[in-house]
Image (tube, rainbow over all chains, first blue to last red):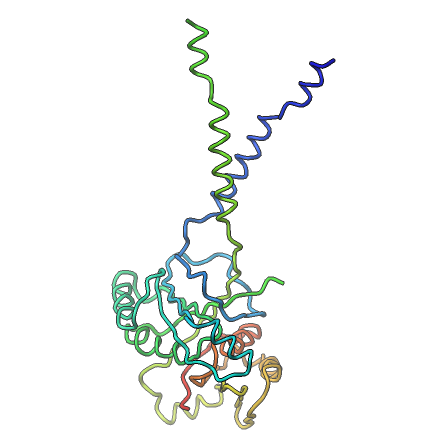
Length: 157
Length: 140
């Protein structure tokens, strides 16, 4: 009687390993190895009506525009105080760069990949347009590109 | 001798389960929620301005939108409207949806407006089928 009870209490190792391996395979497949080294600290502007991109394009160059003093800026805005001067930085693959360096990278990329490669701009939603315009005028346009793609977040609710 | 050989060939289950669980915990912890992204393509202003006659002929096919800190304005000749809300702008773009395929949308953005305001316009335009989107900086 005792023996029968013991055998019922045994952990079903085989089935458990099956499930665990399935889970691991799922995570490995969906992990998609550091896609484009995206700057996760950026809180992009929201686009509620546009369809989200189902498949992200492979050959793209993403320029991240980060509002460094976002918390301070938002706090001042919420309190109705005078807004502090925006401190904005640009980075490509998490490497902070000045506009001339971005322009050079765009020129080099254009030589290798041609004009058709999409240039994506991921910017904080609070960033003033003048910083994007600086990026366009002093880097993107000078490198010879005539189109850019602005990335926005599609809310899931 | 045979028994000993069998023993050494046995899979070391405990260690394997340890490793497998470590891997599982790693992936669960590092998994991030995917953010759904919308890609809004725009044309940049070109260096050369079109000749005056061509510009006048093209004028009819152009819808101008102004994004300012205080709100939005739009101009579909001959009816300019200033200081409208985002909702009004959305209604305007929806009403003129039939012109979307043929019209150039020129969005003139004031330097001190936020990217959210520009994205709002691009979002309405994409929703209503406007594809020729041109963004330029307005003079303050």
